[in-house]
Image 1 (cartoon, one colour):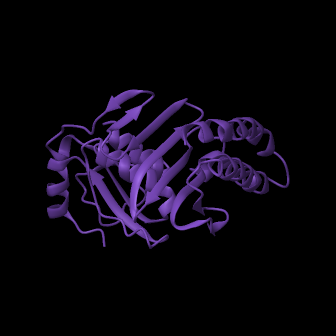
Image 2 (image 1 turned 30 degrees about the vertical axis):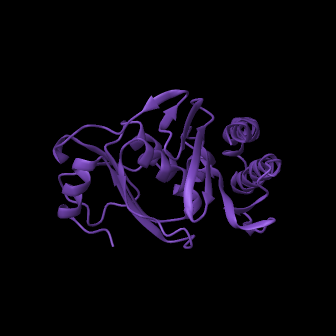
Length: 236
């Protein structure tokens, strides 16, 4: 999974370098970014197809692609943070999840600009560039920094950042950079890798129905803050 991300990232790094030039063109960069998405996805699918598992794929651009194994599948988001990419903001990533027997077994979130690889496998812990990571140990909400893709209904005492990448939000929770993340109406490819990263880093995260690919809402924090957040507000 990591090797597939590294190969696909070469496409993204090259194309990201062209985005600034396209900002001043009459046509604009939207079509260009869509093509970058598709090219990176093609690399990921091709590389993962070399696996002996012969799984199916769930991808942002192509939907569900049936393999020999129709029950188990890779989950691919070639650019999570497309709007950031589109505007030349260097905060986006590749997100890969692995679903086996209706459970996320592994995940990789690769940030090509910062050269950061977050990865986790069930019962093996979470890592950033080969170093073990854990969720934060904060116990008071007023001390916390949260990521969220919405503001309505969140209590006024929450300090919130909207970064434009749900995958990196969850990776940062796993690494203890954020104390929690609240995401509404996201897709499975946005959060699959982040789910196992948070779990394996000792965090708490809402259960995700892996048969539902869209309109997913969830929250992720450390254990202490999770119980407090549940008392403070309801996302759904």
